Structure formats: structure tokens, C-alpha cells
Length: 289
DNA sequence: AGTATCCTGGAA
DNA sequence: TTCCAGGATACT
Image (cartoon, rainbow, N blue to C red; front, side, top):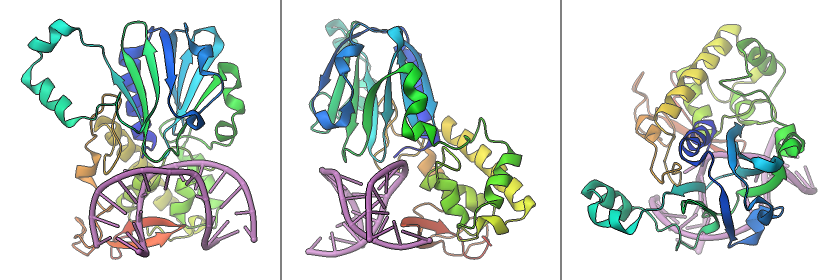
């Protein structure tokens, strides 16, 4: 699922409800999904939430952290405990929302449950089991291979100058460079497709042949699109849900992603789908050059 | 640079 | 039944 905006959304939401909560117990229902000793986190308090690339970090007291990578279908869903007396007075709107939601406690794809002393719970749910959690010392996070290999981040450490330099040094198709977390971190398939449409660049273009102007335009498109995507709480074209179990709304605004055959909103030409680096790639064959 | 792989489920 | 899916890695 999640690219930078989706993980950022979850981070911001969890930070709004989970800071200073103390872990009471952890239920591991599918052992392979988590590495390290989950019991080490019992009694620890959540002191910070961070994101590194597409990885979420929950920092706890005592120098321990819980690293989470959602990969394709992972979800982290927070459920506040609701006292029995609140049940009867819950608004109709709230009950409707819950009806359409999964019962995360009972669902077969819930693999880890973190219980807090408050009674609140955090569910790790992952249909395809590609994601992972890792209990790790906070000071050792930078040694994780995934973290050590991350390139500069969109919306933070990446400057247009650095972006230009990275692209000028790669002969790969631009879309593949944008998705390579070792070169640039944060973008995945959806936002690479969308940003290339925005900047009117053919995804197959060799990165090192792009003009400075095109690169500057692409950088600006990325910043704009990623910021807007965070405001829209991410893209739920399929499995993604935010930390409250809700869908994001970015998918309502896709220009090319999953729009094969539909008309380009800029020039009316049918959006084309090809395979690039093994991934579905959508673009307008007329206005992306 | 390509392709298989970890998994499950929805759509064609 | 086959193909496809917001990722990343380990192979050839």
C-alpha cells in the first residue's frame, strides 16, 4: 500500500492519540511478522513517532523502538476503548462507520495486537503478510539495512539541486529511479506515475537525458502532489486504511494511475498502461514526452 | 537489467 | 483459471 503520504498520515494520527500511552501487553498471533522480543516493550511508554522513508518508527521509553514497514497491504489501526455506558449514547454516524469497518480483533489478517494500560489497542493487520515489525534499540535503527540504504527524502532532505544530480547520474528510465528507495526515498508506484504526468514526462525517458527545466518541474510536482496527498489522508485504491481504519481520498483525484483508457484531463487522449520494471505504469502518450 | 519470491483475494 | 496489486530483496 503505503508510500510516503500514507505512512505520514498514520504517523500523524497515531501521534495525536498514542503519545504517553504505556504498553500493557502484546499479542503476537503470527510470529513470522515480528522480529526481536516483543515482551521487551511491556511497561514502556510511547515517547515519539517518526517516519523514515516508508518505515514507521514508534520510539518508546527505555531506549527501545518498534519499527514497522507496511509493504503492500499492512495496516496499523488504533481503536480507543469505549466504555459500556458510551455504547448506548454513541451517535448514529459513529455506529454506521463501525458497521462498515472490519472487526480487527477477530479478523484473520490481524497478526499483532498492542494493548495499552488505558485499554486502547493498536492492531497490525496485513492481508499478504509482506510487512514486518521489528523490536530494536532506538540507537540501532540507523543500522537497519533498509534505513542505512535510504536515499534523500522528498519533502525533507531532498533539494532540487540534489534531485537534479541524482537523475543526471542514472541511465535508467526516470520512473524506476523515482521508485528506487536507495536513490530517493518516499515515492512509490502511485506518486511516481502521478508526478510524471504532472511534469509532462514520459516514464520511459532515461533520467540522465532530462533537461534542468523538466527536472525542476518534476521536483515541484512531487512536492505539491505529496503534500496534497497527506492532506487527503493517502490513497485507498485498494487496501490502504489510515490509523483510524478509514480510507484516504487521493484515489478520487488520480490523473493517470488506474485510469487506463480514460481520457487525459489535459489533452483528452486515452491514458495508456505499460509495464516498466515489472510495475504497472500509466501515462498520457500525447502530453508526456 | 530482468525475474522470482514472500502471500491473499478481487477482477477479468 | 489466470492475472494483477501502494514493496523490497535475492536470485540469474
